[in-house]
Length: 453
Image (cartoon, rainbow, N blue to C red; front, side, top):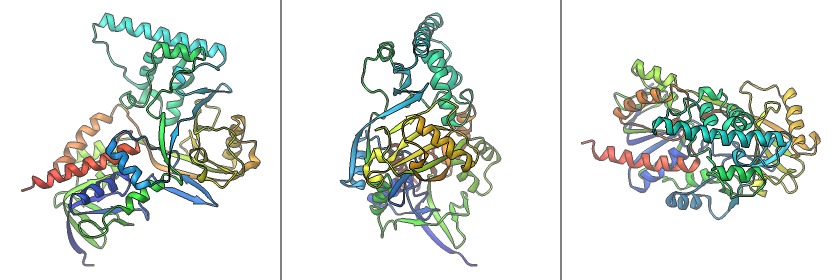
């Protein structure tokens, strides 16, 4: 079959938030591009399903908007139907709820647990200060996330929350993860914060996510609004859905489809980085090996429709204890009442086990845990539960992470390939970051186009 041959200055792979943001900014600058998405709808993970009047995102997707330009754009794409929400999150452990973050809120735990956490924190701070003094400011950094936790939080907080919870979240032991991902996402409280939180003094909320923006009908409103705002003619033609190249000939700078060959000057990809490298025709062996060493975990979770309101007015709950099959539970309808029919609720339940679950065994365990937590009155209020899977959930910051990227990234840059986004950049980041990554990649593409002569 003769394939159509076409050309575009910038080809974009992936119509998630990063890819669409890049196409939007290129279009605004008058730079022609084509945006290809293998799925039948745009949005990537930022989409919303609807069933029987219940709306479900791909688990919790909340907007933390700090960049003024990104905030203006995001709220414009969502429109007036959005909420500004103060976080209501808790930790469930030892049969009680405590405030988030655990490391600064041990009040309410059994006295022996709170004592162990507080004393361990004080000892860890003293040991760290002594080591820093002895090393003259040249103390060795933590070799993994477990060491990071023990150094900053002490044995009690690490054992009761930080290490088990993060092992369940990431799907790998804490010793396999470096601490490089956590500077922004793991609050480091002061001693006075920890002491105040141990005696019940209600200090200010800590962490990057104390407030968030949420569209009233689900996070899909953001992706849908952005997709509508893409140019439909002229320089761009919106997202071309159900379209994924079979291969990328990086030497010829061509995308090879079954029915078309698309020549490009710059390729901008938000596809998962290892998947992009697999598409490259005859990539160097060292690049292929490095990309294959990049790890991520998948995630199984349940969307649960309730025939009653959620029993607690919480947005999400962290669950560190191994006796529960889930590590986090969130309530969509506590984000916005329009996420469920009146008087009902919708939950997401993120599962700690990465193996395919047996629903007949899993659902009674989940219902029992949710009942124990007071989120439901019993299994009878569960209208239905849908098992979902996210193939790329969390990038694993293991000990091969940086060495692998140091091989892959320079090679791609030398081929006029920009790999951006949470999975294109292979990082841990937010939706605001995804929009910013797209904007920045568009600017970089325009720089490359300007210097190609």
